[in-house]
Image (cartoon, rainbow, N blue to C red; front, side, top):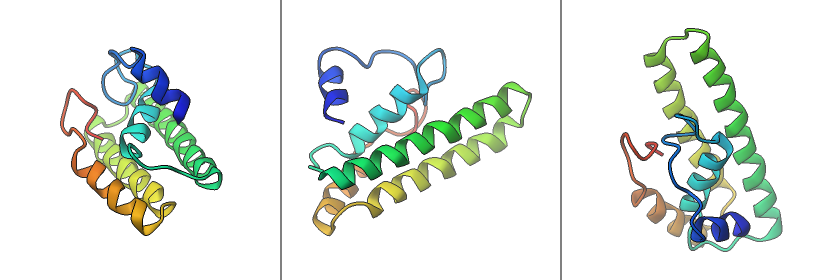
Length: 121
């Protein structure tokens, strides 16, 4: 997470749109989302490993979703599934945190951009 934050601060993180759509790298989009949710939260090594596992699972789940979409799946239904995935992602991340960290996490969730154009985390 620290390396990703440093890369973001050095000018990474331009276009891409959404969760990796429009040519963006899905793993980068998930990392941005994770970084935004964990901003101001210091994780121990065990927490970092759990967060990494949770993030990798979201990337894999989203890849499956994109394959279904490319195969002509129901876009509207998949949008709902994507929202559910993101809600579970946030819940899984939150479960890794201490009570003190959860307060900051909840603040970060409230401050997340929503709607189109910023991925609707």
